[in-house]
Image (tube, rainbow, N blue to C red; front, side):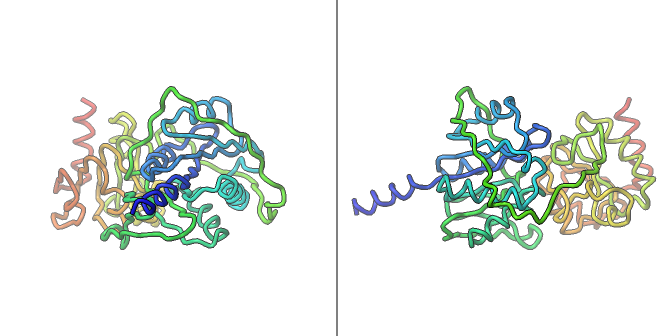
Length: 330
């Protein structure tokens, strides 16, 4: 019995975790801090990975994360735009060089486009959308649009995990500094099959859906895109407020697809979520039901959205929203 315990301790000690930190223009993606928080639950020594055009300020900031042992920095122009082929090659290279047993990233568009490639190259099965870490080989994740929670035990040599950021608090910074190591992407790992051409972005003074403290979402009940103006006016009444939409509204072309909240859109958990004219389809609920406070406005008292709402108003939204906006402005 004594020998078995010692063997288990040695095996535990050999485990290590590699966390990918996503950034854009040297602004750390907040979801990466949630992913790092999830990684600490594994109980392994943690190594971080920063790629692309990385500033000294960003390195200083990330290296001060509590519980971070080492930070790998790949300052390489070929990694600036997160092309999944190049990024997957570097992550695979780092996983092998660091002998990582766990690979963790937030479930963002970049990570969801990259880590499955790494998992395929490692010949392992990925565990996606982790919402709870039970042990270093057992995790919980939602299935059936969040209507059921599956407990998954992985026996893979390297456990590749994407983390639902809304399920974990952001990690905190401290006074200590992790060891920083410069690394290079090996040329032979590049396949040259894709290249970055350009990026067209819609600029907005409002915060992004994943960073906003208040989200006012419109659904099919808005009837057309012109009526979304009233939602923008309502969102502007709140500090750090922005506008979202259901898939029905996005598919109808009333708003851009980047505003879609739901299983196939953004997963959000703001302090306040206001659903206006949203019926509450399962796919939409999967993307916002973790919000701290949910307020719904719908003329249908049987709308499913009311089942997850803290406060519900059964009324004509075209009458109620302007009145609420006027009251908040006053």
